Length: 281
Ligand SMILES: Nc1ncnc2c1ncn2[C@@H]1O[C@H](COP(=O)(O)OP(=O)(O)OP(=O)(O)O)[C@@H](O)[C@H]1O
Ligand SMILES: [Mg+2]
Image 1 (cartoon, helix red, strand yellow):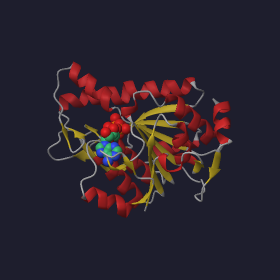
Image 2 (cartoon, protein in one colour):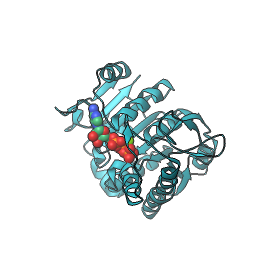
Image 3 (cartoon, helix red, strand yellow):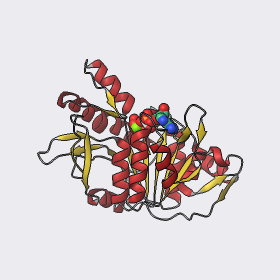
């Protein structure tokens, strides 16, 4: 694993952005495990560079399958899944138990010192979004439990569950959870690993945004260029940049080159603009 990341290095150059501060990596549920090799390469590199990393994961397809098996309907509205109280039990089980533990175990097997956490454990405080049942929006983030784990030299792996004032649980879109947490831990960058190579300015033509700004993304958003899961992802990008995170990247989670570019600002000469999307304020 270290050997492969070293090999990649011979083709890499650093760009103008220097690497410092914490990195938040959001692992898309859409990846369904495709990211395990590339993420191991990237985490090894970050470990070598002594960069603290926090992981937040989604679980879209796994939740869909579990709800279907239970015979529960959960339609999507603007890229977010309408979540009844009954559905919420399943969402929490799948995210905070199954997907979280699987990721923690896979990383532990690759030699990382990880700790699984749920946002509901006094990290992501939330309230319901009108009309979406137990879909929550983050009202406050308590970064302390996460920062403590980082101080202990651990890699926190966090499920996007929120907790309300009455201890009730909320289904927080993983991108929005990651964006809020990145601001609260004062991350220098956030990297969204997903199942597309970046943000398309034109989905049908697969025209990829490479180096772009909040203003351009806002303009494309007002033109309705983003659909489905890209709606909350773009909102997370915009809000996390407003919260002071220096850069937000969207790259394919099975593409180790693109991920190394996103986490270290080192770019691959032969790949340049096909690496993915970087948005800065
Ligand atoms: N303009 C766009 N550019 C890129 N992707 C887009 C765009 N509009 C819609 N999408 C869709 O957004 C999807 C990514 O969001 P999605 O929520 O499905 O994945 P994820 O966030 O990685 O996974 P999870 O939500 O489970 O954590 C892509 O697979 C793509 O189909
Ligand atoms: Mg998503």
